[in-house]
Image (cartoon, rainbow, N blue to C red):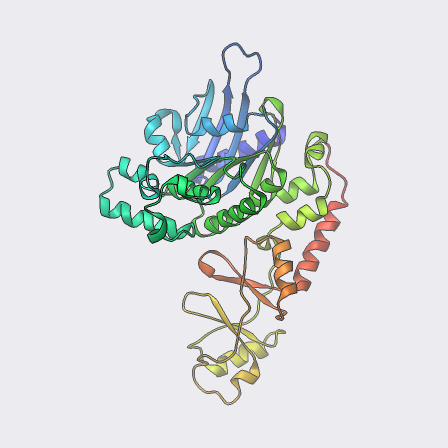
Amino acid sequence: MSDEVRAAGATAGTADEQDGVGRGGIRLINVTKRYPGQGTPAVDDVTMTIRGGEIVVLLGPSGSGKTTMMRLINRLIEPTSGKIIVAGQDAMGLDPTELRRHIGYVIQNAGLFPHMTVATNVGLVPQMLKWDKKRIAARVDELLELVDLDPAEYRGRYPRELSGGQQQRIGVARALAADPPAMLMDEPFGALDPITRGNLQDSLLRLQDELGKTIVFVTHDIDEALKLGDRIAILDKGSRVAQYATPQEILLNPADDYVEQFLGGGQAMRLLQSSRVADVPLQHVPEARTGDDADAVRRRIEGSEIGFAIVLDERDRPVRWAHPDDLDGVTGPIGERGMDVAPPIRARATLQQALESLIQIEHEWVPVVGPRGVYRGTVTLGTLQNAIRDMKDRARRPRRPS
């Protein structure tokens, strides 16, 4: 294990002891797993902190210990030594079955029970937790809508009547059923075709934008890891954590030759595919609301270098642009005046997705939104060009010593 990872874990661990790592945060402290008769540990003295609300991807070749590390978290496998903290509690001090009921788990091919309907599969954990039938039914419908499946159409179906992508959506819904703070996802999209896989990755990011779960995601696909991960742990044989960092840090500054070789080529395009709009300094324009006085909005516009304002609704979602011409002669509230905004770009969207959106629309300025569509700022082609230029400058810096 690298000194960098151990130091990062120790630093985050100190913060965790003081004020927690957030709801659903996970800490592995000197965790080792040895199997009888094997000279090399499957997991060897790993210390790592996963902050609440992050997607952390365990990435590595077969035999690197990534699935073993995941299964240690919910005690499907017991550690030989070390300590695991889940949502502020020592996992070893909890009943394993009770622990698993509060950690969502999604595997490849969904793992649905073939003799149960979709509704029964999704409601299984709430039923074990003794929820009443009305509450379970409402939760099932809510989750099916969340994963873009019509409850009326799908709740009574059986797994054999679903496509592979639909089964995986049901698997995600089942993992979310009891609203667990943390989820474990073991190569959940690995058996799907590229188009379905990409669509489900996008759906997962949309769900994460809304729900903010702590997710540990196992994959051997570097592009999937770069797309999904807030941070990535690149594992070598024997569970050595070669690097634990954000996708941008890994692409710009690989920790060693192993990481550089694992990444392969095409770093420039991968930066676009993995860097998110949330990482870019957004531009801000004067803000207004439907009920704001027109004179006050005009003064805001005149007091800025931007010649217009963005109008937000009662839930802080962007709806219109208001230019001075739209407010000529208006007294009192601005009402519905102005021009509709372009479809917003989500903060979790990649720079590549943002560029594609900006190229395809006629608007120069596009609002950026976070969870629940709340306005966070705006982007233009110039905004993204500057961000890409900064990345290229950082990429030219020499790699730090191993």
